[in-house]
Image 1: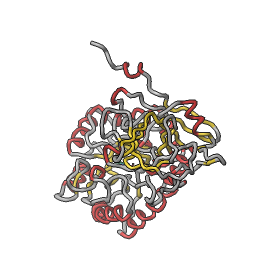
Image 2: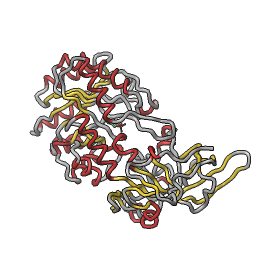
Image 3: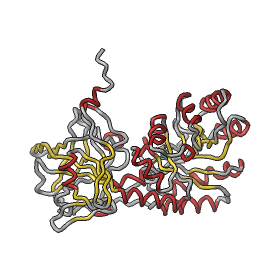
Length: 425
Ligand SMILES: Cc1ncc(COP(=O)(O)O)c(C=O)c1O
C-alpha cells in the first residue's frame, strides 16, 4: 500500500476540494483538460514567480534563470519581470529571449560550441556577458571584434574537477568533460591569461557549473574551494557558480531550497576570503515543481504474473528524462488527488520504443481506468524544452494559471506545423 501523493510535490497554489479534485492557481485541472485537451503542461505562475523572487533575494540582481530548463516568451518575460537575468545557451534561446523583450544587457550567453553566427548575434545584441568555453571561441570573438564590433564582457568557464553527486550524464565539472577549461593541466590558467591580454574582450569573472540535479550543497562548496585560489589570484569582480540545484521528484526525496543553496555558496566564498560578486544560474529549481503534465489513459494491459502497463497519450516526446537519465516520477489522478495509491503499474507513452516509459514503477489508485486523466507532478523542467516530434506526435500546449485564470502560452502543435518545413521535393 502506498500513500497519497505528498502535497509537497504539487505546485505552491495546489488546492484539493472536498471531492478530491485538484485546482492550481485557482483553476480546476480537469476543466483545463476539457478546454485544452491532453497531453497538457499546466504551470503555476505564482510558483514560478515565487522561485524567481527567492533567487533574486538569495543571490542578488545578477542571478540568471537558465532558460534551457523551460523557455517560452512568457517564461522569459516572467523571469525578467521578477528581477532575474537570463542564461541563454544557443542562438535559438538568445532569439526567444530577445523576442520576449528582455534587454540584451540582462542576457548571459553560454555554450560549449558557439558558432561564429551565434557569437555575432550575441555581440550585435549586445549581450551583457559571454561565458567563454574554448580557445576556438576566443579566436572567434577576436575575429568578430576585429570586424568592428564592441569588445564583450566575458567570464571564463573553468572546470574545477569536482565530482558532483548526480547522474553521470548530468555531471559537467569533472576534468573529463566537454565543458569549460580544466583547472588540471593549466588550460584554465592559459585561458585567463589570454582573455586578460586580449583587447577584444573585457574579462570580468570566472564561471563554473558542476552539474545538474545536485542535492548536496557540499558539492558546490567543494567547487568554490577548488576555484578560490584561482579567483583570488586574478582579482576578478564576478564568480558564477552556475546552476544545478536539485529538486525532489518522488516520495522520500528532499532538496535544499534556493535560499539554503545560496547561503552555503556565500559562506564558502566568504570562508575562502574572496571579495567578489557571487552569481548563479538556477534553471530546474525555478521551474520544475511549478508544473504538472496531464495525460489521458488510453489502454491498460495486464500481463498476468508480469506487470500492468498503463499507456497514456504522450511519452518520451514530452518527457524524455526517464529515458535519458532513468529519472523517477510520481503519478496521481487529479479527480482523486489524495487517494491512496495501492496499485503498482508501469506508465508508458505511445511511442514505438519499449524504453518509452514515463514512470517505471508507479503507484496509482486502485480504480484507475481507461479514460482517466492521469498526471505527473514536477514536470516543469527539461520536459517541454527537451520535447520532440518523435513518431510525428504533436507537442502539447503550455498553460499558465494564476488567480483563477488560465492563459495559453504555447498552443498545441498541429499537422500543419509538422509539415511546415517539409518541402516535398
Ligand atoms: C552553464 C549552465 N548553467 C545553468 C544550468 C542550469 O542547470 P539546472 O537546471 O540544473 O539549475 C545548466 C544546465 O545544464 C548549465 O549548463
